[in-house]
Image: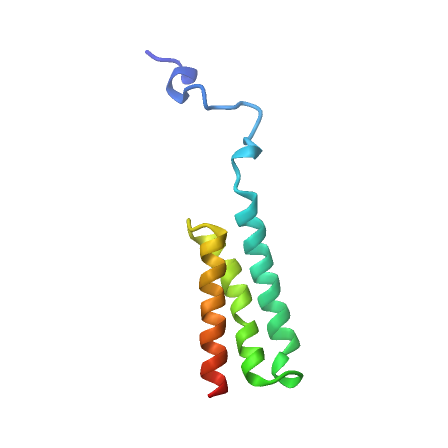
Length: 94
């Protein structure tokens, strides 16, 4: 009968989780996206700046959250967020 160590293999660490395996950039992107969303809703930028600009700024937390939940690179997520910001800004302006 195989032992517990044989079943778990060499990847098992009895000292706890292997912190280097976490994708910290995606974790921080999620925290940033949620924080910026809360700040955006709390501030209500539509009071202070033009509507098309305030609507376009709303795409920033979407980019962070997209990066945190997808397997795409940060460059791709930044391009998507910029495209969404431009589209929302132009749609609101016209």
